[in-house]
Length: 470
Ligand code: BGP
Image 1 (cartoon, rainbow, N blue to C red):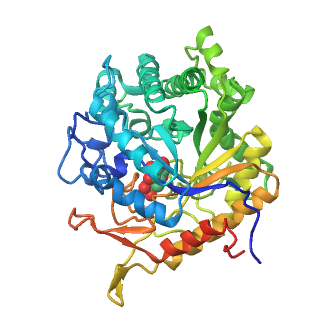
Image 2: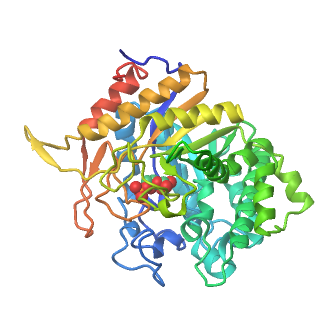
Image 3: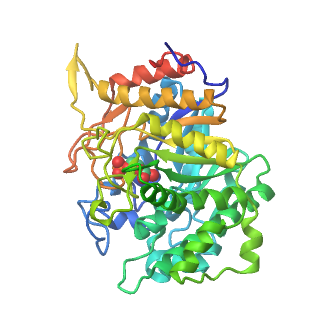
């Protein structure tokens, strides 16, 4: 049986982020970003400055190889490509009055290339790459002035690229601000950092996102602006009502971000949480008015689900994407401990659709795995059937959700070409259809090789999902 429920015009492609792909961390006027001081990803604290062991400094050199890489995406038939703009290429320190023209020109060249193949760009404005100066000088998003810096940056992008880029995302995985403050929101660790500071940072980002949406409507009338959240279904560890309630409350802490983005105001349950924590946020009347500029669509990453319980003795944290949770005993896991749950993808799509009634976009999904480069008939490749299985099973569930009535604009699998991992900063955690010869110790030629999944995905795209195995 095949799943054929993908609508005509469904966008198929892949996704990356500037800091994980570009390299050239100090070229053409680029300033430092928080990523340039995180050589181990989230595993160890930041370094004072860039260090040679930071694979992101060179990454996979997309900065110089973008044309060749985009040609490979086109060969697979991509109709959309999600990438982020490195804020510190455009405003090297983040607080300048004028943008860096060399940085802007780079993305013109990327867009030229995409246009050549008719690939729709999907641009993330801020993807875990806050300019380091904004972190060190202002404390990142805890400071209200960040809204103004972001606004200027977003306006610059809409003015420059607004005629060429239809789909925009304001903040990557916006709900991660509460979990990974430095990487997500440029908030340096400090002893007196409070929960209130994090909620205030969340509020600043939500206002900034809404303002960007308003500005896009003024200066780039064809633009569609979306939010981007980590989607992670949460299952009760037992059928007890106490566990179900604990799940609802944890789910609320993520859904709040989508609720504000789609409804334009804080939901009651969120205000209650703040009240009960004794947190009073600085929210102005102007903020409230800004928040009413709601998004056109909701996008999200989906890798895994978790379990949760009210029982404090069972609250162990497993491995996982940023938010984490209790491992679900019924599910297998990837080599990095991320639990594999295709049905969870259908659950979140249905939930988001029913809750928000906004078009959805799956902008990250995939399997990080170790690959072995082999030679077959003189051609180097990777036999990544495990990746094909993962993607197939998740796409089948996207098809199911569409059959349930959800409006899904498209699917961009994460790391369509091997890139540096966000959480561990390894090269060996690979997601791509294209293998990049670079190793964790920095060695490698940076040559690109097509994996088995390359042809598989090309076929999926060619017949609009008709080749998927249910
Ligand atoms: C998401 C990020 C991405 C990405 C992905 C996979 O949280 O938006 O930037 O990298 O997770 O994570 P990792 O690279 O750690 O496997």
